[in-house]
Image 1 (spheres, one colour):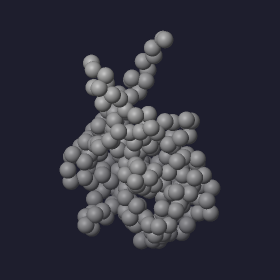
Image 2 (image 1 turned 120 degrees about the vertical axis):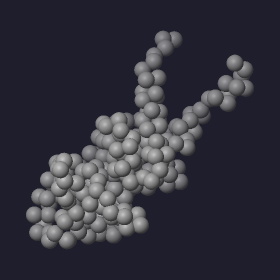
Image 3 (image 1 turned 90 degrees about the vertical axis):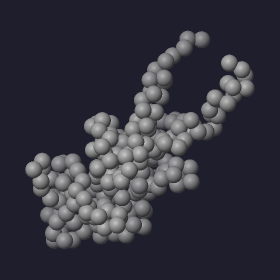
Length: 223
């Protein structure tokens, strides 16, 4: 292979955000993965964010907000609108009724353990069925999440570099983790309420890229 071609195939070191500790964000924006790569956090980092949020003035509320954004793969406006009456039961258990873009209503899956925590929180806070769990604005939600990033020592994502904000990355991260555990892109598409399967396939490509990198990192040359 010619030297010129080798140079074109080499990814500049400066284009990759290298993790320097276990607490550094999993956000990676490299030229080699640009385009379809979905920036995200891993589940342990989300747990760290939730634990950090609990140290705030409204700790339990803020912790539940972060978990719900991730677990339900929700947009900020959807999460802060959730009420106790939106928890519904179907033949498989409990789900969450969400009003999404364009006012479209859909059911999304949320972990049974988180549903139980939401019920307990509503009881402790004496919430009526039509009271919001999170009576805050989108700006307040942003401040809650960014403060959790700072407390947890996890670098915040940048819209300019990572193409996603600190709140919306939790939706991305929940989708990636659901796809890892289920291996079912169609089910994740329905959870995200994507009109086009092409949007959801970006998550599958991201997992493939992560797995490929992990496999190649296991290769060790002895020099």
